[in-house]
Amino acid sequence: MNSSSAPRAAAMFGVCAALAVFAGGRALAERRDTRTTVSIWRGGGGATYGGGDGGGAGAFVSHRRDVDIGADGAVRFVGVAVGMDAATVEVHSVTDPAGTSVVEQRFSTNLATPEALLARQVGKPVTVVLAQGEVRGVLRAVSLDALVIETAGKSIEIIRRGEHVVDIKLGAASLDNEPTLEWKLAVKKPGKHTLDVSYRTYGLTWAPEYTAVLGDDDRVDFTAWATVRNDTGLDLPASELTLVSQPGTPAALPGYIAGPGRAPVSFKIGRPVDLRTGTALQVELAPKRSGARARRVSVFEASGDQTSYQPLSDCYGYMPTPTGVRTEQMLELDGAGPILPEGNVRVFRRGDGGGLTIVGEDLLRVNPRTGAVRVRAGVAPEVTGERRQLDCRVDPGGRSLRERVEIRVENKGKAAVDVVVREYLYRWSNWRIEQEDEKGAGAGGNAYEWRKKLKAGESRTLSYTVVYAW
Image: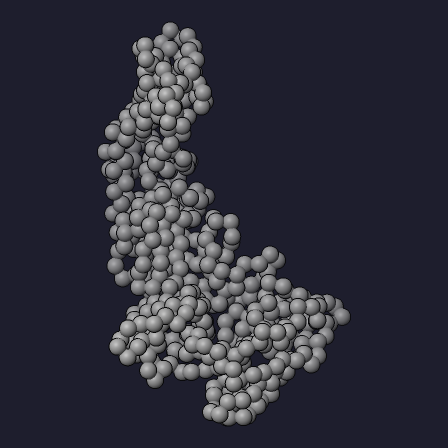
């Protein structure tokens, strides 16, 4: 730090220190929530509200706080999330709901920096301490380089901000050093009220994290946790926390119209948690399952999900190709409790001595219809297959497309296997299976599956017709 910047830093520290001493007691009194509830939800894409990437995620925070409302109805509510959407604020008086309403609201943010505090002091008393004395008056303008002071004699002084400025003292009126809601309320009963204040905000996110420990006889120890991140700039102590997921929701796409979604799944955490800003907290998402019996299945996918292409009226564009086609070996567990969201799963194998050896990290596959989960255990080279388009037609009006597909799978191994044939109906979100050789079932989003038992050396063929409409 050079000689000219040091006094300026000291002066700015003086601004903050003077305010902090005065404002601390009042801010604490106003921020004493008697109840805080936090709901955080996430879509299939796992994006965050306000982060610019869509995905249908976000958070809702509710504070219950006792306040004094005077006859003028003016209320300052200090301590809200800086990323709050002010248009979503709801104010409810528990004391007198019918006789209390909001007439006017103001959201003040970016208040904690010295420059922001000085800017809010314009029109108010200020004392500038210089090396040669003090200048007292009303602050009329402020910039990074100068202060404009109207003194008691109505003269104007322009003070250059440099090494000769020792300190800047602000009056007691400038104590908003945190994001603050200010209201003008219409009240029939002035006095002490209990208010519930709720709003939507960004900066609160959560992600599922899973661990699967593989044991003998295809038994699995399975744990499910959620990592909750608070980047709101606001501590939320002793919060009642609910985590919400939307099963089977595809990632947000330009021009994509989502089909009917399934009901959101809520995970209410059983005890209050402290969500400190700038930190991550892990909470249990579902009870641990020890020694759960898993089914070994071979999952054949002729192609990955191609939803992002959305080729409405092109029968032959973005056709799945046999390149890289393989069958994965999975361990499948029946659902137990609420349907879990897809997320990272770390897979370990337990050795004879009880130690763990890492197998890998993958995406936990979840069927949002049944709640069953699948953990990848390797590849199944003995199961092969191919996919062929038999027919594809676009109706003359250009509002639908009918496609017929044939899939052949073969077990080249020496033992019987359970095979799941998984297809992604990727052309559009509005689809229906018009005909199928064997009954399949939706597996969430645009996925559809058929289950087959193949003997050693056996091959099977299935076909289906799907109609897309838009």
